Image 1 (tube, rainbow, N blue to C red):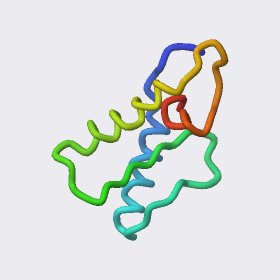
Image 2: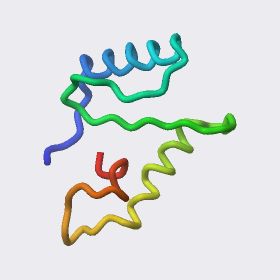
Image 3: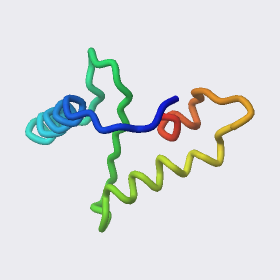
Length: 80
């Protein structure tokens, strides 16, 4: 896997999709895209929602087996 790079088209699509979800009070994955996607929802308003979402996604690292890399149910957000 190569280094992470910024993709303006992907960023615009993500922003457009996030706005659509917010404008329509929806919470669902996008369809018809060839990119990974993580969604986060909380029953309360955390002080820093992006930080909290990242902590939860990264928390799955404890279940990741570096000797057998790949997707698993327990590491789906971490391996994004």
